[in-house]
Each structure stands twice: as C-alpha cells, then as structure tokens.
Amino acid sequence: MPLDQPSAILACGLLAALAVFQVALITGAPLGRMAWGGQHRVLPTNLRILSSVSIGLYAIFAYAALAEADLVPPLIGESLMTVTIWVMTGYFALGVLMNGLSRSKPERFVMTPATAALAALYLVLAVQ
Image: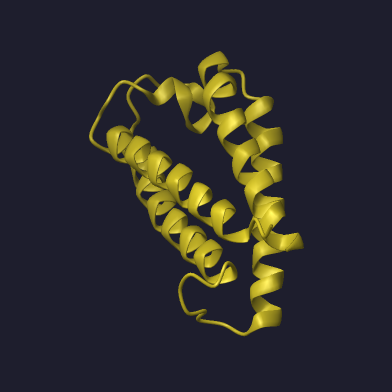
C-alpha cells in the first residue's frame, strides 16, 4: 500500500499546526519558550519576523509534499522534486538535532517530536 499520500496529508496537517503556533507567537502569545531557543516568553520583533518567514516556508514544504504525492501539480521537474524532498528530509532531521539540543525544556518537549515526525513523513515521501 503506498504511503505517499497519507504521509503528505499528515505532513500538511502538522505544518498547518506549526503555522498556527507561529501565528500565536507573532501575535504575542507567551509561548516563546517553545521556539527559537526558548529564551523569550514573548518573542521580540526580530523573532516574530522569523516566525512569519517560517509560515511561508511551511507553505512551500506543504506544497512540495502534496506535489510529491501527486495531489497537486508539481511546479518543478521530477528529478528536482526528488532532490527537494530529500533536502527537506535533511532539514527536518537537522531540526530534530537542534531542538533536541535546545536549553529550553519546553522546546525540546514540543518541537523535537514535531520535527521528528516531519522528518519521518518526508523520508517516506523521499523513498516512495
């Protein structure tokens, strides 16, 4: 049974949840201990800007997952899409390491499993 479509849909759901989290951070919610190193309860302006950039990246990541699973038309060639999905897999794997090394216990507790799940889902997409 192919797992690419369920993996893409699950990845999009997780990315959407992370986007909502980033919006909360941008609007001043006191959740900063779970992001960006966890040094701020409420994010300063520069980290709020980075949170908005993250939302844009999540949209690109989601579209790539959907395209790899043939749920939306791809915007790039098949071989470049394969490379892109592998790069995203590596990006999320690096995120697992970075979040796991965070000094912030809340960030380690929340973001490490989230990035691990995304790394696994993109790995499924990469090997399908």
